[in-house]
Image 1 (cartoon, rainbow, N blue to C red):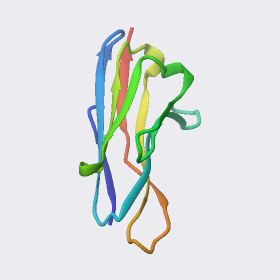
Image 2: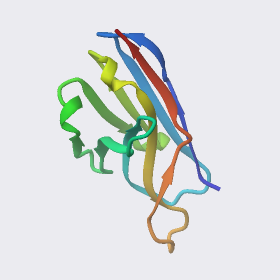
Image 3: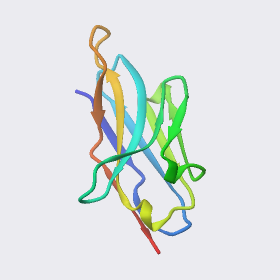
Image 4: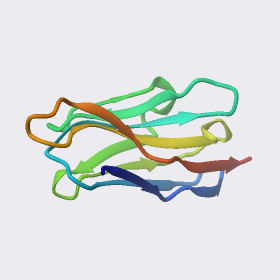
Length: 121
């Protein structure tokens, strides 16, 4: 059974920094892209940042220049370094991985349980 476990959320003042981590565990044959999404109550979940297995990245416009996504393929872990945080960054942050369990499986999306990030003004 595949699990994605996030950590690193919390409460921080505006202008501060947080680093989120997400480790994928279980039977995993291969991981393609990994990413971070966020959701505010009552709104749709939105992409924050995404990174491919080769290291190519893309970011949502509101976080460009402030957030950095990275990954450690040996540890099946993705990170999100968040700097210059703003109150509007407050949300539940979810990690996602496009992976396959067995070599003959197809790639499927797996999600973490989410971690709360709260930025106070």
